[in-house]
Image (tube, rainbow, N blue to C red; front, side, top):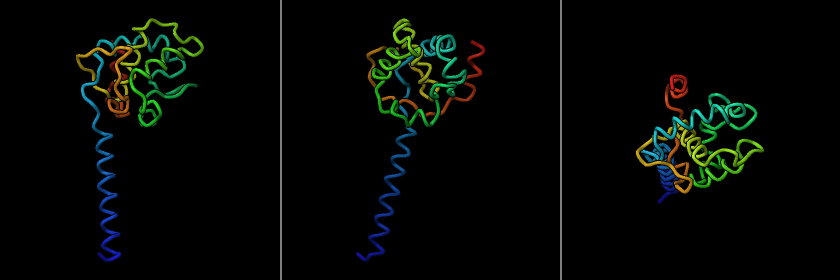
Length: 152
């Protein structure tokens, strides 16, 4: 094999690997392990308990954004849903971790997952559900997601 052929073979291998990695990111587990009812309830609790710091549209407002590509590629994406639940429950609201009911934290998490492109299903999310967050979110907020919030 000549140097040029080796270079082309290496390039082809890198390109194929990149394509596989890109398509893997776009292939979220669907449906995710939460219900639409959980997300809807989480939306209401989010508005009451989280929006003042994280923004009405989860865009971040003094606290980190909870949606978008940055969130989808953050350390949260590498955690499981059970780990994310524990983080939210023990640290949120800021300086008041654990002040909400367990179901409230679960429902807020379902809302955040849906805001990041996860599709609800029939299996309820629980504090012990353990699926890698990055496997169920895309970081893409569904079209009209926040507008539908105003009608609920």
